[in-house]
Length: 240
Image 1 (cartoon, rainbow, N blue to C red):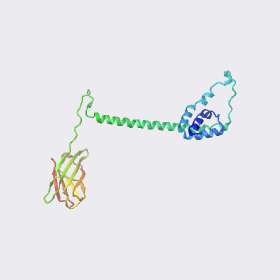
Image 2: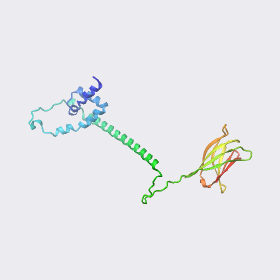
Image 3: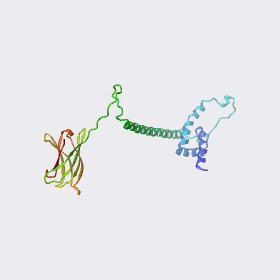
Image 4: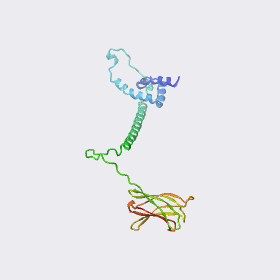
C-alpha cells in the first residue's frame, strides 16, 4: 500500500477512533499516524465535539429505531489523555503558524510604510494647522578645510567636519605623511583649547584616511593640526 493509500485509509478511521470503535491494532496504527500527520490532527480537532454531541441525543429506540447499542471493548478506545495531547499539539502548531504569518505580515507592512515614507518625504508635511505644506528640513552641509604643510613637511590633504549632536566628526584624507609616527589630529578652538580627534600609524604609501571625533561643536572648531609623536606640527587647516 502506498503512503497516500495508507493516509486515506487511516483518515477514514478518525470517527471510529474518537468513538472508540476501532480494534487495538487500528488504534495503534492511527496513534502512530497522528503523531506525524498535521492534516489528520486538524480533522481530529474538527471531529472532537462529536462524541459529546452524541451523548445528548435520545436513544435510537426512543426515536422509533431498532438499533442495538454500540458496545466497544475498553481497550479499543484511545485514552482521553492521548487524544488531548494530540489536540494540544495541533493547536500549538496552529498558534505558531498564525504567529509566523502575523509577523511576516507586519514586516511586509513596515517595509511598505518605510518605502512610502521615503518616496513621499518632503513633498507634503502637515504641521497640524490646516495641512499647510512645509519644506523638508535643510541638510547640514559638511565643512571642508585644506591642509597647508609646515616648513620642511610635504603634508597635504583635506579635513571634512560633519556636525553631530554630540560634537563633530572629523574625516581626514591625507597625503605626504612623513615623520615620527604615530601621528595625531588635533582640533583647536578660537580660545586656544585643544582636543585630540584621531591617532594613526605610518603607512607604506605615506597616505591616511582616518575618521576621528571631538566634543567641540563644528562652529567652534577654528583650526585642525596634524602633529608627529614629538608634538611637531606637520600641517594645519583653517576652518572658515
